[in-house]
Each structure stands twice: as structure tokens, then as C-alpha cells.
Image 1 (cartoon, chains in turn green, blue, yellow, purple):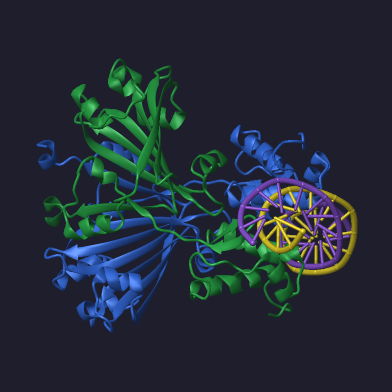
Image 2: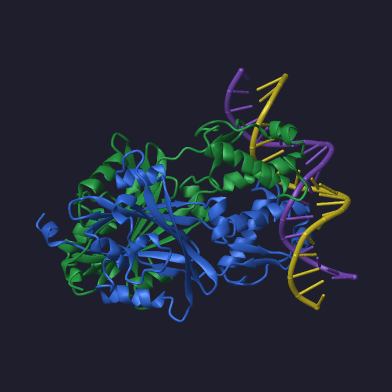
Length: 258
Length: 258
DNA sequence: AAGTGGTCTAGACCACAAT
DNA sequence: TTGTGGTCTAGACCACTTT
């Protein structure tokens, strides 16, 4: 380790540890050297060691666990399949296998539901094509798996459409809110998905118990009826270390003609 | 600002600035107070101020620009539409509008292509269902927009299938590599998309010129022929601050029957 | 009681781009 | 030349969990 004409020491320390994680010297779940050990090893101040470790933490490679030490992160993402709304089963064996491999079988799911009536945030109002002053009903859910928060899901509906339906009750709807909407005459036949990737807000980090260096996918799904009316916007916040998002696509006959 | 029985000072400083960014007091592109000013304002050491600012940087809210100061980040994501492979035009007016709004019209695209023959990484070999020792051809692309790196795209093909085709030449294939594959008798009719969300590796951060606090989407697309043979794996690394990923879905007739 | 990381201080020198 | 953030030091005290 040389400190002349090279990268700063804290970056060299981070790179050395990164290397050991990559090549398996430090396996998933293994403990890193303590700050004191690294301070001795590299003959630098503790601040410099901490600067290097902070890099790894913010890359999501390492998790500091006070007062035990730093550990290499383990990750095993579950599959998240937006298409499951419209299609319960994958139509190909490949997808089927993939879903099975990343399933939540044997794990205990739980969710908390909260319902509110509110003025829609601007991005929701726009997607639902609402006029000023029109209200929405929102069903907020936190989903848990084995006692760990898994994702946040807020579904917004124009209040006009769902008032006095069971969508306003903070209970589990086993057949799905979409089915209730369909019974009310608003069956969704088309959906538009948007996926944004960003760091969580402090509030999201707290609710999802996210460590530093864990980004989220922000999934916005807008559902439309046959005549093009938007009737639902679902916003899901998915921690990157707990999900893999999948889609399956088919070439359509009409395209083959081109 | 109180330092008894409350959050640490550096978190309070970060929260105050975060608030000003959220409510528009500090607009996108605006300069934050300097470290020296914050040190005076909050009557803390410079280290504490830096700790707070580092939080915001790692959240992707703020960009440090030496030696000018810290600035509120601007972001304007372009649309990324995996389905465009199979369907050149959106089939709904809503999607069409969305794509137009986030289009790259008037911007100058550029790409660099590099071709190699190699032993496939394990995750690629698995998706292509290759035996040990089978080689792949890989076309590596960096795409630029207005001189800014936009995304990385590596496409892998079993070498058996594409040897002596123009896929091995490091030139732009205007009709698309998929079309070449189709001409060779391997038309893709189905694709499986996987999306992972994580922090970039240092190498990715360097190649894409990513600032701290910018996560990436890691998009793996596996394409299959009619008889279920995987013939292509495309790996795309998408910086979160430059992309919104979209999908469009339709309920299928067969599902309505359920 | 011991050892871990978390917070904070007060100072120092450096590299760099704008003026 | 000036002022910015970037790197680094040596020390201090704290909160927490394990032993």
C-alpha cells in the first residue's frame, strides 16, 4: 500500500476490502477487520479508516452492526411480478422456473392496511386526470415477510368511483381491489408501468428499515378501463436488496408482418 | 436547533437542508451554504457539517462541485422502453404521450461498440443454458446523449449461432442484431426481463460518470426462439438519474374467462 | 468490564478552478 | 490570489451488546 502519487488512502483501503469481498476471501456474512485493526494495518488515523468503510457501506456491500463490527452484506431478492395482476400464471416454463426459484414459499407474509381520503399529490392527480378539488381514496399497505418489511404499496382511486364500496374499509380484500373496481363497472384492461430508481427518502428508509446504500425502485402503475379512463394508480416502493422485478414479453403477430 | 435528547447534530443539519430542498427554498441547481457558513450557523465543527452534507450527497439530493460549493441536483430522466424491441410504437395514446414527453428528440446520440469472444460469466451461461467450455460473442456498447454517458449495454450470443455473421463486427447494425439473428434462423418470439436495483460498482460509476448517491437499474433480458431456445442475453446498466423504465400491459382474453 | 462503532472537536495541509 | 471542498490526524466521550 503506497501513498505517493496514488489514490487517497481511504480509497485504497476500500478497494482492498472490496477486492476481498469480490474474490470470496470475505464471504457473505463474514466479519471485516475492526476499525482498530485496520488503523494498525494501514498505519492511518481512525478517521481515514472510517472514511473507507463508509464508502463500502454506501455501496451496499457492507453493513455496520454496532457494537459487533462490520459484516459483508447478504442478499436474496424475492421476485416481484407486476404482470401477476392480469395473469396469475407465467405463460412460459422459463418464467415459471424463475418465479419458483425466487418465491416466498414457506415464509410468513403479513400486511398492514390504512385507508384515507385526501387531496391527491400532484403526480397522482395528473395520472388519474383529475380536476382541481377532486378527492381520492388511498389504501396504504406495508407488506412484511418473516417479520421484515418488504415493500410499501399505496393505491389511489378517484373517490367518486369507490365511495361506499369496501375499498374504503381498511380490511384485506381477498379477491383484490381491482376486482371490486370491476364489479363497480370499471374493469381495467390496460396498465402503464413506470419504474424510477433512486435513493430512499429518510421516511421510506425508516419504514422499510433500509440500511445505508440500499436504493429503491419506485413503481407507478396506472390502470385504465376499456374506454381509456384511468381508474387506479398504484405506487410501490421496492427495496433493491429484497426484490427482483420481472416482466415477460411476447412478439405479437401484427409486428411480425412488418 | 437543539442538541439535547434529539437526533445527532449532523442529522439535524441534513434534515434542515433537506427540508429547504423539498419546499423549494433551495431550488434545483441552487447553491447550498458553504461548509464554513454552516459551521458558523450551527456552531459545530467542520467535520460535523461535512457529515451532514455527506448524507445528502449519498441520498442523491446534492452534488459537491469543487471548488465552487454544494448544489441541489437537477434530474430529468429519459424514457427507456424494453418493449420497443418487439413493438416499435406504443399501442395506447397514454403511452404514446408519455414517451413523447420523455423523448430524446433534438439531442445528439452516439455510441461506441466493442466486440469480444469470451467464456461467459456464470449468470450469462446459466441464462443461455450453455455447457462448460461453450463460448459467447459479446457486443459491448456505451451510449451517449449530448456528450453524457447514458447507459451500458452488453449483448451476449452463443458463439455457435453467430460466428461469421456481422454480429462479430464492431459496427453499428442499423436493422438491429435481433434481426440478424432472425435471418440466421433464430427469431426471438419471447423475452424474459429481470430488473435489479443496486448501487453501481466503482467501474460502472467511472464509465457512466455517476456521482455518489446515484443507484442503477441492472436490466437482464433473455430472448427465446419459438421452440424455447435462449439465443441472446442483453445486460443494460441504467443510471437512476437518467432513466425512467416503462412497460405497457394488456389484460388478455383468456384471463377474462377466469 | 471490555470492546465495538457513533459522534464530535480543532486543527492542518492540499488541489483545484474561478477571479 | 482566494476560497472552495478533499484528505488526514489525534484525541475525546458516548451508547450499546456481549462476555
